[in-house]
Length: 138
Image (tube, rainbow, N blue to C red; front, side, top):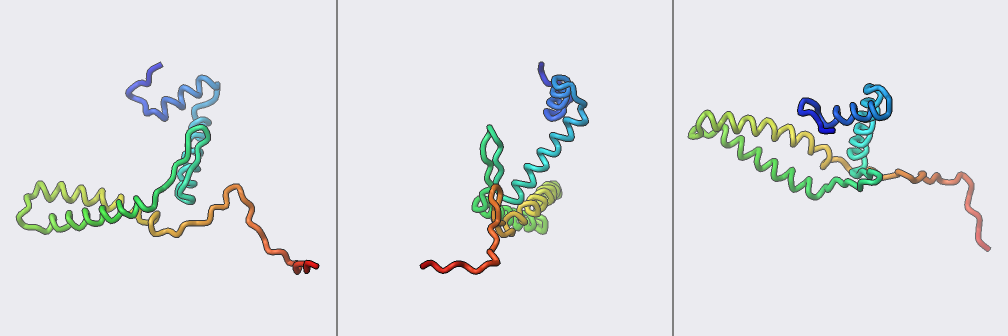
């Protein structure tokens, strides 16, 4: 069964699963949306995501910093191009559009670079200090 061009991959898979599992499309869509939201939150919080049977995704902070610096340099170059009187209006419009999308990308990446890494306690219990004094070893 080929996917129609009018449907997104997500909608196509939801329809196909609804027919196969005899479940409503709303229910399956809610489950799929929840899974993607949970995966996105885990990646944002822990900089890693492990999908069973697929693999582990890691956020590389070092590469992100390099990309962030490159984006800042591009932003500066585009801003200079906008104020340059020798540049044509068409190029200024193109530079403005690129600058707008670049600023959005910078705002998305900035919190990930600035954030301190959080302690990963998945699968582990946090150890509490015992209120009792320790015993002496004889």
